[in-house]
Image (cartoon, rainbow over all chains, first blue to last red; front, side, top):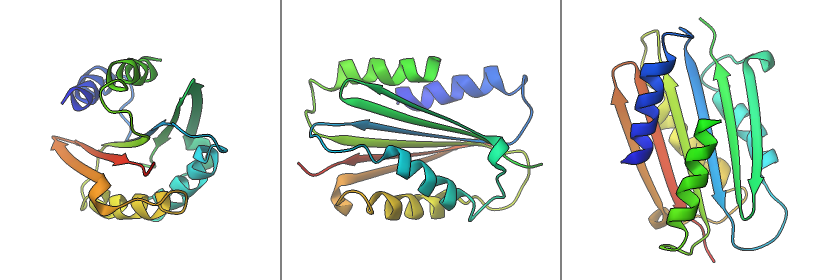
Length: 82
Length: 82
């Protein structure tokens, strides 16, 4: 599965640089219809859900939302507390 | 940003094959400490959150959870209704 390979690669190259516990969430929405995007609101819901399990500072979250034609990608990178 | 490049690539190769509106969610957890994994429970929470925005059949969801050493990856692929 190519996507999992990607993460595995990333782990081996990235873990030496930042030895922190981390959580990365990616949401890719391939849209057909119109209507407003719900990814910005979904981002807040996702953080709320994550905080059920771990304490996450606002400072520890970086968010990226991109649109490229019919595709939207939401990326959340969270550095977890030690 | 390499990860976004990956999604972009995926879109152009995959969209011709399956012309459905889709949502893909990836959660990668680089763990340091012990304790039980919360990704299986998080999966249920994520689906609950997604259902706030779109009607999702159970049949339309495929789930994959992998562990590789200190890293866990949860993958949700959701085919959205037309």
